[in-house]
Amino acid sequence: MKRTSRNAYDSLLHALRQGGTLKDQENKQDEPARREDYPDVQFWTRRDWLDRPGQESDTMALDNSGQRGKARASQGINVTMRYIEDENGTVIDGHRATEVRRYARLIWVHMANNGGLPLSWGKADVKLSQNYCREMRQRFPELALCDLDWKADQIATDNYPSWYKNWSETSQKALVKHEQGDSSAALNQKRPNIQPPNEPAAKKLKVTADPSGLANMEVNTSNFQVSTFIND
Image (cartoon, rainbow, N blue to C red):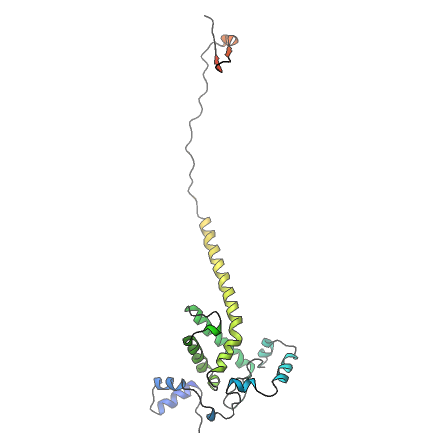
């Protein structure tokens, strides 16, 4: 059977030439690919990948390279997504794998902004999982070349936990910073200048007695009162 192009634009042209519509093409893209149409793809099922021969030697070769995954991916070396193949059975390179991870993160950001972010990928509901897999297949047609979208799901299983942890920590820091900014703004507001009214100055004691009579002052200790007796 002749294979049709996996490019979205070419597929749309093909549908229009056949008298189809854009809606028909979208529905066709959601139809699962058939393994017999792609005999060169080795890892059609997850079991094919898990039971592949020489997997231990592949892992040891990658571990002994002395380079981290990001460094090797930047050099075009695919480290963790060697189960993703094109229609000819060729494993995608590290640059393509980097784009796959980047686009998956963009989908998760969209989920977060729309209030649909699961705590773990295993807790994602069927709608979130279907939308994610559909977006990934449309962006990267090679992800459609498998059974039950297991390759797109494997990408999420491997990458979502670390992404979710970083996203949660960043969001929490941003929230704390925002709350601290609001508190500082409230404290810096000008407070009303409220002071008690001025009390009248204390009146000076006016002595009306003749200073000469002060010598005859007597103290009545029984009533703790001070009295003066001035001689006429």
